[in-house]
Every structure is written in structure tokens, then in C-alpha cells.
Length: 186
Image 1 (tube, rainbow, N blue to C red):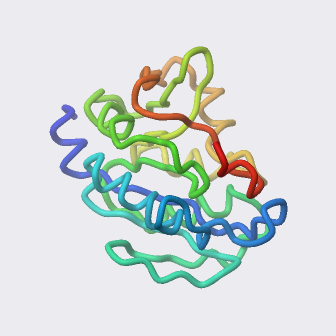
Image 2 (image 1 turned 135 degrees about the vertical axis):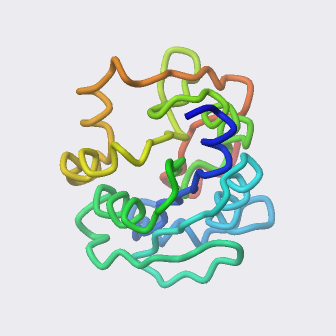
């Protein structure tokens, strides 16, 4: 499948189910630069070229304009259950996944992953990997079978490194996440 086909048929998934215990409340509802983190993540995926966006809620019910919200009843078991819920809601040929607590990601990173033509792709920032992550639908069953706790797709990606394309995204933003309110002050 070429890059144009991936871009035309890719969904975005925002993992937004957590309770934000270290933060003091659900991060999806936190406001940053005038908007909720969940709305910012949806905009990132849409601006990056995702045809549809799915938001996975859990600890708090969410209403998000421009996105389909699916509720993860098992959200307290960790990010993997949210990833599984999101992948099950996607009928497109690929999904670009971002956690809700990465407000400095840029839409250019999403575009680069979609334009790579890869079926498994991970954004890199210098020497480290980060988000977004692109997952081809043919891998969804294996990813959900190996996802446990807060590990998400990491186990599957590590076991299949030869299939993963690492896409440099240093100049598109930062993959830093938000764990505490102080993290939002930069």
C-alpha cells in the first residue's frame, strides 16, 4: 500500500482513559494553551492527515467534537486495555496512536509517519523513540494479544523490529509527556 492510500484510510487514536493520579485528575480534561489536552490531540491527528479520530475514554466520560468516543470499561488495568479498545473501534487500514498527555507533538510527525508508506512506524527524536506510532491493521490482533498493563504496543514492536520503520521527527515537536501540573510550565 502506498503512502497516499495509507493517508486516505488512516484513523487516529487518542488514548485518554487514565485517571491522572500523579497529575491530580484526568489529563484529558486539563487545559493547555487554551484548549483541553484531548481536543489538542484530536486536532494533531486531524491536521496530520487522519481521516477519522477515535478517543478512548475511561476514568471520565468525554464528549469530543470531531471524534468518535469509545469507553474503555477496563481503563484501570492500564494503557494496553485502552489501546485494545481503540484498535477494535478502527476499521481503517492503519491507525496512528497518541497518548493524550503529549501536548508538544506536532502534526508534522503524524504526516511523516503516514507519508512513510510503512505499515509499522515509530517517530524518533534524536536517539529516542516516541509518539506518534503508526500501526497497520494486519498487526492489530498480534498487538492486542501481546499488550498488557501500561506497555501498549511496545512488546510487539520490540519483537518485530525488522518490520518497524523509524521516522525522524526531531523538528516537528517534542514527545515529552505530562505527569504533573509542573510539567506544563516550560
